[in-house]
Length: 391
Length: 132
Ligand code: SF4
Ligand code: SF4
Image: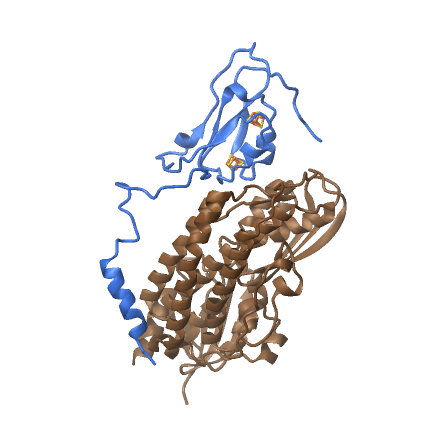
């Protein structure tokens, strides 16, 4: 019988604001159990919000995640607007949708690159990140920055999309749609992708529901769930789009869902740009928000993002609570890993698209009986995974 | 079903296409006209109301004494998040956002911009907007 090992991954594993530590019990190459520990890199953003005014909070909230920054500010602004009883102008709603969908495009292309990198397909990583630049340039054009767009303000948006900008965005969308189609074909036919993604870390719909997964992770297991359609916010009620679902439940399913979502996002973008209503960008927001509380939901690229704000009548919130989508998905990856190989750890963790803002992670392999320890960096583990599959 | 075939034409296309990167610092990526770069104070317009400092999320603005009746903002670009909120909060349009973004410096001091000293008679025209 093979010796049992405990394989700690992390805790230097910052993903979103919930970096995690995984303790894998492995038998030979097979993972038999996973223990997930959260809370290593607590930044105290929620508490810090309590000592800032609502305007300052927006920028702090934006920095919860560099990739879904617009998701967080929109969810937060929606809470504050609800408490203050503000109805933002239609044009502002459309611009929020446009920036939100561009953010989804860049996030999914980024994910594709990260996934390609984790399975040793760096060509895919370079191509998809090159194409992602086009989206970032559009975001820079609209908002003035590549990341942390800061387009939202309480009561609307800060910048307009005028005629020339609109034309420029529309001219890029067809190209991006072609690329998304190309990647969807590539991922479903390429032998490297199929070998590493197909039937790995299967997660059934029952499991996905029991573990409360959200976003593409849930939709790849056949759960029909999308806040944009189920509880429309901003202008999503008017947007024509279809919720992409795959019942594969494996890593390939998660890739397909994300890549096809790019096509749907492009549809939304085209509609929103062509039907952009006229009107003002903001309504006047009070500096002091009346006492009250609100919850808002937002379909971030990674899944449902929930914000809660309680106001006490002053110019700063009394309490802010954020539930980022990775929090909902993280336990699912723990469960879906059981029965997979050590070599699959990087791609399975990457498959839920936790915000990979980190550089190197440490992995320590401890031999249970002898206490003998071996330390691997994330890069070594990635290389190990690639070599293991080449054998 | 193609196996590795899908990516091959793409590889050939890339062989002949121009590089996606630029040779920085010899050439730089252009930024759009309303890029959010370095915020700069136009001191003549500033009334010293302090609204910019109140809303700056990064505590990058400090109101310093310039010898006039009211203090004026000093920027610390080492802290600045380039969010442009100061320019939006200012009611006198005294802060402009420039496209300047090559801001690397050798010391933190070099990243600070203090307002120049003023004489006492330069009184602000507007009263301060404290709270609403
Ligand atoms: S741009 Fe933002 S961070 Fe920088 S000084 Fe202005 S308000 Fe502060
Ligand atoms: S908000 Fe404008 S006028 Fe007031 S202190 Fe700042 S720069 Fe001066």
